[in-house]
Image (cartoon, rainbow, N blue to C red; front, top):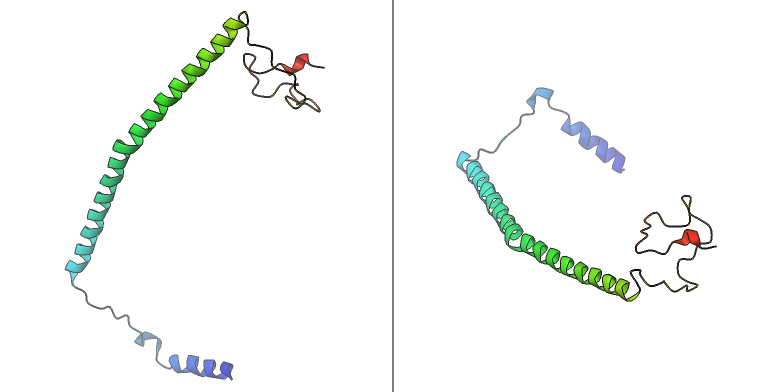
Length: 129
């Protein structure tokens, strides 16, 4: 039944000739468009200034504070390592050979050491069995 009703509705809407369909546009005053456009531009300018201020007065100082903190922390870490070297005759103390540390079941394709091996910090696993 719904098929018949739908077909009848379609047939009734197609009765008029093709050229009789016209586009009706509500006449709006031109000033309304320009007022909206100016409001959008003003909002965009205010938002841009807000984020520029946030960047200059929040993000850049926060980044500078974090950089200063990291530099201070790394200097303390380097001083601690140098102190440990002085206590052990110019070398870092031997890393304990715990069973759970640096465990290799099979070597990496490039050898026993990791890809990011640093001879000053990491234990050399190529000297192990």
